[in-house]
Image 1 (cartoon, one colour):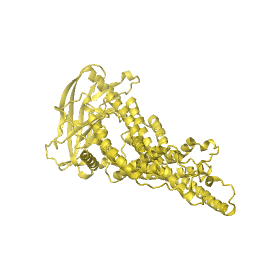
Image 2 (cartoon, helix red, strand yellow; image 1 turned 90 degrees about the horizontal axis):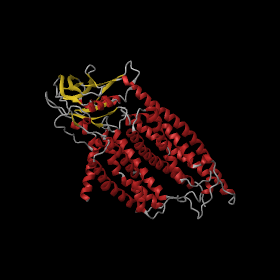
Image 3 (cartoon, helix red, strand yellow; image 1 turned 30 degrees about the vertical axis):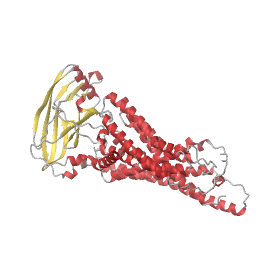
Image 4 (cartoon, one colour; image 1 turned 135 degrees about the vertical axis):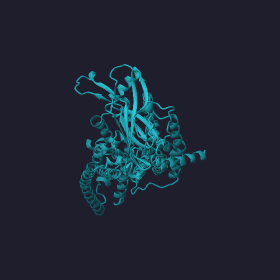
Length: 592
């Protein structure tokens, strides 16, 4: 068992280190004239539904004999990639003119299938020497036709490949359809199709090392950069003004409080206390459901660590365009390897709060995020299977993920939990806690939990909402996002604003003599995740053309998991900041 576990860890680390180079290293080939250059057909699907993709040969294209499947990395399978050998032969430096790949007689059913795909703007994706290429299956002629029943549907039967080479290496490839070679599929009648292709070779001076640059340039164009930097400057100015305003008020009020309380201690010991000092005997009273709070804190800390590692990999250039498999692999591997952080944080904090059932706390920590994610995955994978889409994971991939969870994630979680339990560190409370809790005075409606969460989440969300569109358009569309430095700046702003606004609301809560700040600070910190999910609804309705049950369920299902992860991560950040603040202010006064 230990040997299997060690092998899995080694495989995971090797996969993480090597996946970023899968495309480039495997394609770092030098060719001679006439050599076969690998061309793989990947998938087809509606342009506006990125999650709804199907295998290339689910449609009656030309099929080579035999069809060879390319071995995929874990992340590529998770991304829905299913590469198979394509029916076109594109030998190095060999030009072809209208060569017939195959002749097919489409049945009525196949004609209807193609027509339905063309009406939904289906596209295909291929990889030539590991360079991505795309094209549409056909077109709909709507010109001069008001009635949809008069539309004409045409299938493209002639593909023209233009390939650029630098000496003995492939640098760039594009594909377009011949607008004069069309097959009319409007009627439900069998039709013959001669699938043809043309290959043209051109020389270029672009070095091999820069052949992927054109895919990232679209997100780095001057007008795009101006928009991103404008959003950053706008966010920074807004955040600095608001946080500066709150900081000035908070520091001034705190200073007055310190002076006032010091004066009260010197002048009259029997004077009645008020404000946040009045509840010094209750502010460090352990919260209800402390096991759940500790588990949420552990999961949030693990997700924060995961985000930091992902940013590091992105900033050093691991995630280049159209290699999303690297991102999925990194997420799975890093999450598995950082589970010990969740166990250590949760168990350590739980024991500090004098919890006794640390085993149950570890089980709760392990299932708090993975549980909802697993349930969501099971539902969405079932939907994908029903649609026969490539998003449905093969049984072998599911087994590998379960093995990683059972032999890597869970043992590391337990090891971290044992280390946290054995730390035996006492909770650092500057004030003694009284035996009986004070009654919390009646509070106005805007000091209740939900209004406070709304106020806490709005400011951090306002700092990131401009950048959210580009992230959504990349994850749930076909826009390329490679400006990770700007995204990292936005992430840092998000953390700072979340911590500050949570501290400010915690102070106002204590000033109102409400000592139940533990859960409130976590909920206020994580409330930005709820705002992001609300933005999902706006994006789906107003900014995208997604449709259909599968795409809708994938979008809202997986975004619910992502927003829940943000809720846990930012909640942990808000709680940690509030805990440091509360300890600081009560350490600065004389508590009896």
